[in-house]
Image 1 (cartoon, rainbow, N blue to C red):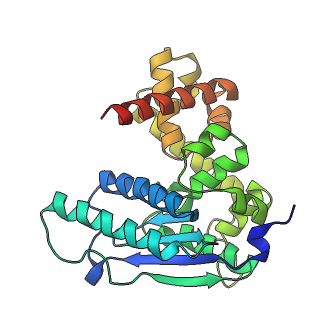
Image 2 (image 1 turned 60 degrees about the vertical axis):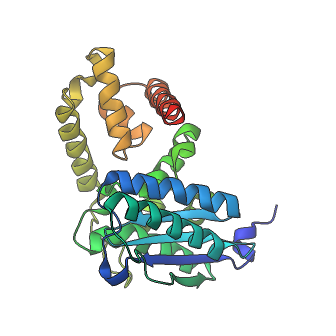
Amino acid sequence: MQRVWRTVTGFYHVCARGAGKQLIFEGDEDRWEFLELMRECCREEGVTVIAWCLMGNHVHLVLADYEDRMSAAMHRLLLTYARRFNKRMRRTGHLFQNRFDRRSLDTDWQMMEAIRSVHADPQEAGISLIERYPWSSFAEHLRAYDGDAADVARGFSDPSCVLELFGSAEGFIAHSLSTPDGSEPALCDMKETECERHAFADKMAKSLGVPLNVVKTAPPAQRDTVIVGLNNAGFTVRQIERYTGIGKSTVSRIVRAYARVKAQAELSE
């Protein structure tokens, strides 16, 4: 079957900025609302979100638009979010600049670089390491390489294009942590990076009440809290399995159960 995304120009790197460097997110509630609206508006207009990153006063997106509906999707997204934000903050006036920026991506290399730069924005701004920043699609793409359908379904991006472009999780990570001029990656020692991830997971587990090395033998409620917390922080099912010694099927079951409860709670609101 022909890969449409390789043969048809319809990919864009999009950036929407706050007017006059205005902050467009005051807290996590705002970010979640933007993401939910992004998913809704893009789906209804037939636009696919490939990668995303939310910063304090701007948003980066990589979009696939085969039906020339991106402008309609972005207009609705930014207008609806701005109205809700202004009402919540009791402010008036424009939240975003009048027009969003967009650049066409016509080759695989341009696509790969756009995805890399979107995920790298927090690190280049000195805010967070790429793999630790919670408000980008980086963790979603890693979960897609793990092959867990439930994890993928929870995300806000379609990872299929990324899976094709990079071929493996190692290739995706290596390119994501590389620099545009081809020099050494910012985190070139993968073993060191893995140690850092493990240390961060242990710190998070302790903050949730159980050291990482005893999560497996902890009471079920406490164990589930740590597993869900790690997953929400961007750790994949396989990483959680490796760090805790709990089987992949058990970790997946706990994550899926939490996702169902969360979805039911949102529907009842």
